[in-house]
Length: 174
Figure 1 (tube, rainbow, N blue to C red):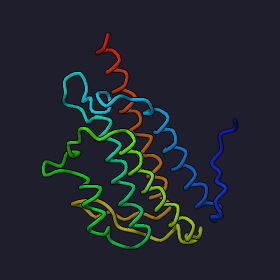
Figure 2: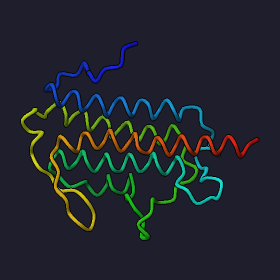
Figure 3: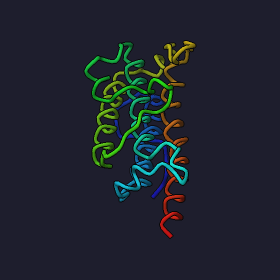
């Protein structure tokens, strides 16, 4: 198998490459988490103070969902916010999640990826330079191109946390 940032979707070349990076990292997330037990998905590290795999997957879904709507130039609809929950709780931490199965978490994430696909099918390479606002307290500006890259990078970043949790979980079972 050859790794490449290519998609068979009918997208503009650069849009397609960035979309492929997001999809490649989402596929990798599924690969490294597939087969986790519910106990492992909810595991919060040896001191019980880390974000669990469930929290991290939900966070990736929420961040990507927000980016999808930024790319669309629309606010996230209230019913979608209710379904996916807030990105952060009142203490500015990832919301607590327990008991959601891997399948539930990944199904919700797959819905976000379907929305992303719809947006990317409409985008042109020229539109990648359009600026959008993002951030919480301090509004920042980024191009759509950076937003798509960030979605892939952010996913991969949290995969490192999940891999560390998996290692710690396995060691705790010895």
